[in-house]
Image (cartoon, rainbow, N blue to C red; front, side):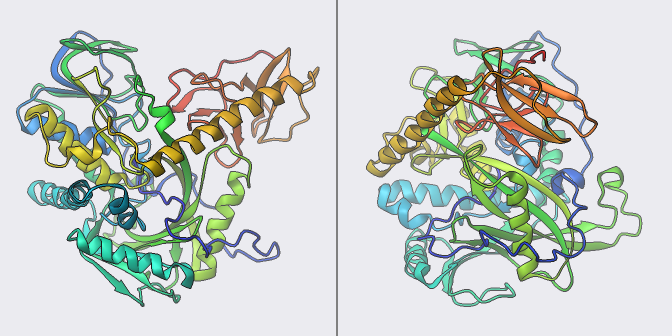
Length: 551
């Protein structure tokens, strides 16, 4: 549920990122200094909610501590429900903690295609829900005095090349037809020329963790709970429902699965969504950064926005801000791609993001770098509602395609309405059981053919690989997938020279994992599961880690 950039929705005739930057280009200072952490995590304290201890009955169990889960939980609590929110690690540290935090109903060049695939009523529901999400966040901030750098600002999707201008104009017409605050402009606040852009007024940006950590404090207490380090393993969708966790069972009338990818998947969500990974930098520039939020039509696209930070912005001093000063960092990102597939390594994708930033701005230093992953449904509309046709008391919110700040907020509002009232004015367009449109069906076939091709190709590679008798000759911080003793293994030599070996088979659906060289993780190309170099699960859909192997 992040607002990470996906591939552009336009013709893609332009590219914001030079695929082959000058190897002799001097990147300037700061290249080797970025902290491998998201700006949002670095500028907020860690949380320390207690883990679940077993033996609890509540009205609603919410699984997942990101923006969808926390929004659902606070909406339900304010309606008088007792809620237990279960987070496998720490709240707001996974997808929501790695977003670009654009709170906008502008989702690239999207509304023209939305109107062609859905009827007018459903297209209007999508637009209204996302606009209402912005207002809801602002209302909560004002009502509770939450200091989270919220500001209204314009959002732009600009044409990366003149060939995209027709798509941009069509998008303006479609968005305005739905009552959205859209206009066509030929100038933006960016320090470089663009052929044209669609502008949405009265959108917003904020610090997602500052906002959501305050929401979590409001959820916890008075009969409701926030539990961390509590992993949900299974759900019995009976009456009442039972959520099995690694620490005991939670009994609830209703359950909401808000885990980015639904771990309880009887409806084949793994086949109806595909993962995309993108990369972000927080940079300090000389001069005033541009106002607004910016997204391009290129493929891969770029995203640009600002974020104010206090002088005490390192995590170890977050909240102290001794002299009260504030500066503004520029968040720049892009390079979205399907994880684990052939292509440039992760380190090169970060390099291209940095080259883009330095070519367009006077970058003094790169302070932080991080990546994020999102799931895109085959028809590009999130799944929000009953999780499958037979589990009428289990609900899901997933598939926000890189726009999780509005999508996750809207999902929380919809899910709370469905549980409390039995209906929502926006529910139809997001119905998880909706029939696919013709182009969505085509995308479904193409995406699953790609996954199937990966699976078959991996099996062939595994079978044809020669047996290894020795540990491969790896340098420090290098990894390789090899076949030893008849089994694919992922072998990594860390910075201290210690060798780690794990099974290279993802336990979700047996695809072969790939090494992520910048973040030192094993990533699955089929459905986006990620694992540490020691095999522990970082993100699903896999529920189990990669098995440790003896060398």
